[in-house]
View 1 (cartoon, rainbow, N blue to C red):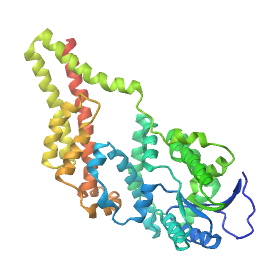
View 2 (cartoon, rainbow, N blue to C red):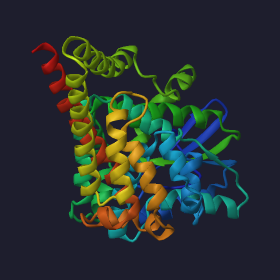
View 3 (cartoon, rainbow, N blue to C red):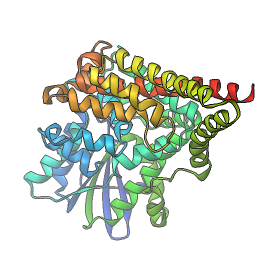
View 4 (cartoon, rainbow, N blue to C red):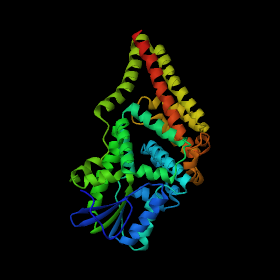
Length: 398
């Protein structure tokens, strides 16, 4: 639906007026690290006094912006038990990149969203959080990405942390222009189509449908500039039936489950067969090789991450066992032990964004070191599984 004329005010081109049924929506496209965007949302909300202000936030991100002591309530043990450590790491990586750019301009990431909420609160205007749960978004993106594209995505995010390129308000203004923005979205679609579909296209649908369902006839919606064109396009369609699908985390396919269990069954079956054919002593020697092949690389991973000594020992013991079950990995076991013996302090949560941009910061900050423990021990266990498995299969068929 094309923008409608809006004679009541003369705003910048970042404000788009949409009519839908009995609603009039002022859609503000912002850059999440721009002072210009902060000023714009205050101007629009103060002048229009809408029935409701819609924000591109979910409940968790809203609390992260508004609650200064949010880290004190973060239970890392529960996050590890629920296998959400990788999700937390990716979330922090992206937030750190935005914080770094915002620091160059003196604006914190999401400042315009927080300012919009505060401006609405001063005028007793209700707010509506219209974004999809960030955990669902990240997990859908991760599950929809192939193994090699996962590596490319992580490498790109890590590389961005150490990029020292300066950015200016003028550059931000250029990036917010429709033609440049469309080009960026197209490039992302070509390189990482599944990631773009989840991070951008699906959220365009979700944001649009949530705006449609918001109470009030006159609304202000504050969203990132990258969503404006998609939201405007979606307003012309009925996508309500899509909400259930895009808010569900895809289950692991039966094929991958079968592969996950086939490896340990193959190893155990091979050891039993070796024992029957060649005797218990040979089977015992192969079992010892399996333990060492898994335990040593996993323990070395812990040492490289400067893990607690108990974590290193725990990683060595856990790897040969966790490699025989797809239910839990050695990385999660090692991370849990690390949290037990070397938990991060509140200050390290607060400085994690800055520490991520420095190579030494990953070892000095206990939260980042936890991620290193998780990654390095998991990688060591994977190497050990292939080395140990290869040796056992070779001995079986020789």
